[in-house]
Image (cartoon, rainbow, N blue to C red; front, side):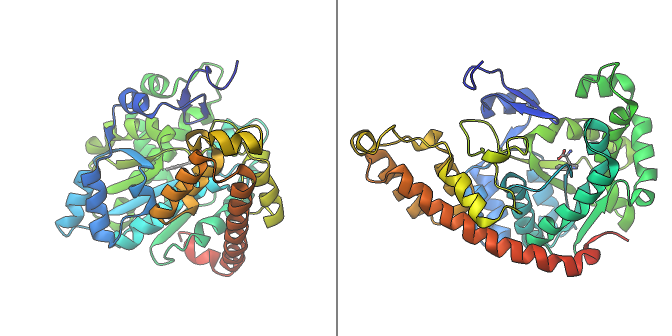
Amino acid sequence: MTEENEKMVVTPWEVRGVIDYDKLIEQFGVQPMTPGLAERIAKHAGYMHLQLRRGIYLSHRDVDWWLGEHEKGNRVGLYTGRGPSGYVHLGHLLPWFFCKYLQDAFGADLYFQMTDDEKFVFDDHLSLDQTIGYTYDNALDVIACGLDPEKTHIFSDTEHIQHLYKIALRVSKRVTYSTAKAVFGFQDSDNIGMIWYPALQAMTCFLQSDRDGENIPCLIPAAIDQDPYWRMTRDIAEKMGYYKPAQIHAKFLPGLGKGGKMSSSMPETAIFTVDPPEVAENKVMAAFTGGQATVKEQREKGGDPTICSIYAYAYFLFEEDDAKLIELEKDCRSGALVCGDCKARLAKVISRFLVDFQAKREKAKDSIQDYFIK
Ligand code: TRP
């Protein structure tokens, strides 16, 4: 089966096929993002983030309500997380950059969950030592995104369980096995760790409210595949005396190959934050583009940026300037720009980004303890 006609699958554990975002919005029953909402966020931030301008946040639940609470002068909070199963790649950074923007704009605390338990029970190949090791490694990436140490609370499900267990228990008592099966599609052969795990991911929605002793509206920036967790959580939130968590859903960052999201299981098409810059440059130079087979043909017919992974990187992350992005698209379509030059340009940008990010990551080692919850 080729990528094109492979059926779309989007679950918390698997993302496959060609992603049809309109269909996802309908299937998941979420609200499409609107320019008005983006404007409202931008007003508080003082500028419109690239990811908002370019429609990378495609849908949401209750962002209007969350903004309204802030506008009334109430405290608001943020929650996101990471399954620490390996090194971090650029696709993971996308929502974390956005969290930094929201944290600054709304003065919000961010609770950041490292699900080393999830990755252990769902993955046949990872030991607990490995997932916990990645928790501390990946935390360096989170910190390198520039989050505020006073307002960022990273925790590991295994290492900080004493702060989480009581709320997780209260969540678990509200969710029947039949609901969990319906939402997540569990099978009889699944281990019971998998079935318990959603209580942990849901619990974080209420963690700040619980710790601070007041009800604080929680917004979760995340890729849309995590939605089933929030559907489950929203059903029980009010019965537990909390607000329903709000969400804002990001599109997936494509990989450097043909179609599909950036994925750690295809390391040659993913750029990891720990990649030596020259390795990343080589990956970019080997990437799939929307170009023609030969330079001559490219000059005559031009390329197709809509299917090009290189263009996608400029669009999602690396070309801040909208005018320059339009120019890039135009030069690609007209054939004025050939793929080799375009790739070389992006390779340099990514390599500079990595040098800078890796320095921040190194520096984060000194302050990592300031970010973990106590
Ligand atoms: N389940 C997520 C993963 O596998 C990790 C996660 C936990 C998360 N809580 C979250 C992601 C909240 C986004 C938002 O990566």
